[in-house]
Length: 465
Image (cartoon, rainbow, N blue to C red):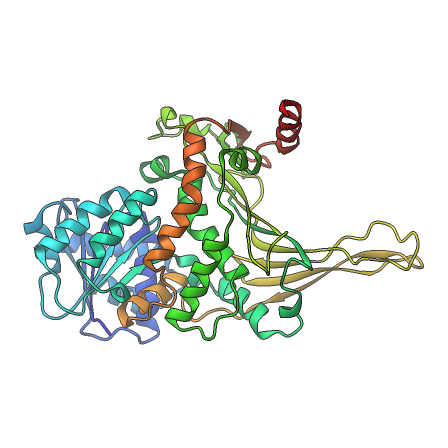
């Protein structure tokens, strides 16, 4: 267990909302001892006392459910060192000390390369680990370059490309539901499942994140990492074990089985949009292009949808639809597995019968199953939903990821080849969007998202043929 953590980008939103509360949760559960060292760094002209005061405020706001003693311990243990990640002397002062440490880059992806180059020049003690936030790079070329840099610094099992979705309790239940329950595994294939939706719709707008988001967009921010990781867990073949190698091998198999997207596929099977002015949760929201810090010339999308097909024995014929959007009227965050209808109904005119849908709630730890039950009239049917609330996990997602990084358990981190495969899938989408092959749609804040124009695309294609 590594007992030293250095965080670059420590005054940012990620550290305030997730890393500090995650460390406090570890402290409350007894995973950190009195010798734990926390060195926090950024370019702000602060001293340690200023940082500790700020950290205490952030913990009170974002970790108020945690014991006050644990919050005070984490804030009090922090030491602040001002540093520019491109300056070797300043970075050396951050990582100086005895024994191995975990270096956490809570930075925008555009700074990863320069930060890693500086850390490499300073030298890391043997046994150290490097933790990088998503997205890992900005495209395939940058991901390959980062992997090459990391390979020259530390072994692959010391690199933690973290995605907090993989540490969410509900996500782990996706694997548990299908691999442990005999009733599901035999029907977990294209013979019984018509479509899988992986959705992260937010009723939040930009929330002051223009500095990062306007350089990323919905596809890079959510689809390339979070949603593709969920796709891997839903579609993977059963691993021999949940060990680091077995689990990550099966995830890579899924990504390699995704049918490559041509320009025509991107036009037919993807959508991009950004929100306009509207009302959200009772408040007036400006259009995305009018948000502070946004450059309209970037053509950054706040909504992205991608339809994928897998060329594998298990999934040939099933559609996988990945979708995310900001400033939407609903807060829908789930994996929805749509089963095919039964081949025959012996009841005559039984009214509308809906196929079954198994739903994994991604935010509130629920699993539900949409069925058809007996209706009020003879031989009639009505929708029936069975819902289960899952047990609250003992650690929040970032607490789990930090514990894994400090203890060296890489099973839930993303392997280098996996990161490259994810970009290989979506680089064609980025390329087609940059060439404006898919129009930028608009939807009002607080609405349902952009209109579905897939039928228009199909009619246009038919007319051209």
